[in-house]
Length: 180
Image: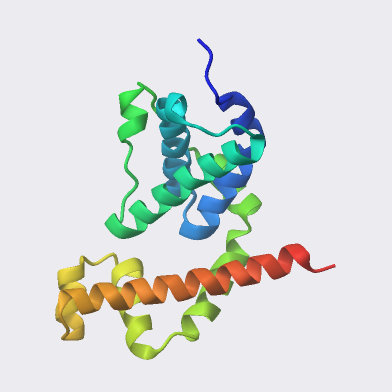
């Protein structure tokens, strides 16, 4: 059965960078593993539909799946595992040494410090909305009630805050990579 995508090759080249990317964006190795496994399960289940013809296009296709997984997680607050279940995979529970290794490889201590700094750059209202939704894991109706605003306004504040944090943290990561 020939396919246009060599999942093994994509895994070998992008598996570790994707896991670190998820870990740096969620600051949680367990969630990163869930998003990572779902990304590769989605890739396996949709490889026949992939129209990429070059290695760069195939990498872009895989990273596009990863970005959608992260966006869905940020919107819903949990990592879906539909493709993992659909193709009959089960991610074994992560043991403490594996979680510690992921934290170390992703540099999560530094990420957490960067996140605290980045949060301090947000306006008070936006920062509070992000903290209630992401840190305290409250549903949007509760965030809206606590902030005495409408639910759409709460969603907008959280979205603006997360976008600003993402841009700031991505800029910092780029500076780390390009610094001599």
